[in-house]
Length: 199
Image 1 (tube, rainbow, N blue to C red):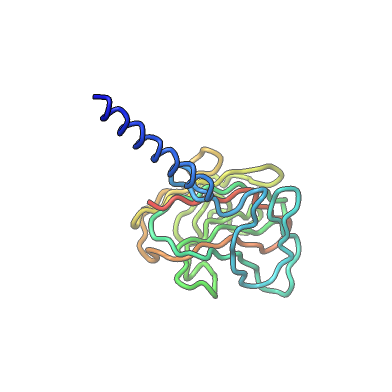
Image 2 (cartoon, rainbow, N blue to C red):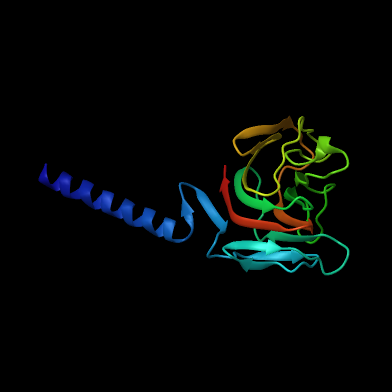
């Protein structure tokens, strides 16, 4: 009895040590933190913008050239959840591109584009929509406040939740895995925290 109690205590202690080590490496409950107020994370950049860590958020407000800029994840993901906290102004054109077939070229034809674009001429694919895949009606507004996107991709099933409200829920199998990217197109764009949980 005593020996089994010691063994159980040793197993619990070992599990606690492993959990602590995992959390120290930026993971908690399966979530991997890729960017937060104290960590820029590792991204490759496609296109050029003045991305910089400012007041605890990765911020851009100017392009270097005509093409949008993207911070592209180092790793590729198939099924996952993403939580991203972002702030944009009214002029912003941004988004989170997921399951990109390539890492060195990003657009809505080779990725799913979860849009952040309050002034999009066709609002049906504006903020809260997946461009050319899932419309949003009515389109929510994101400008001038901190927002949270929760993006789930599991097989062909894609779900988008903005600030607790589901904005898109669709089945589509064009892209089943790949990198994801944070976009800067115009205005002021800030990302304060980005986490991913492989499923």
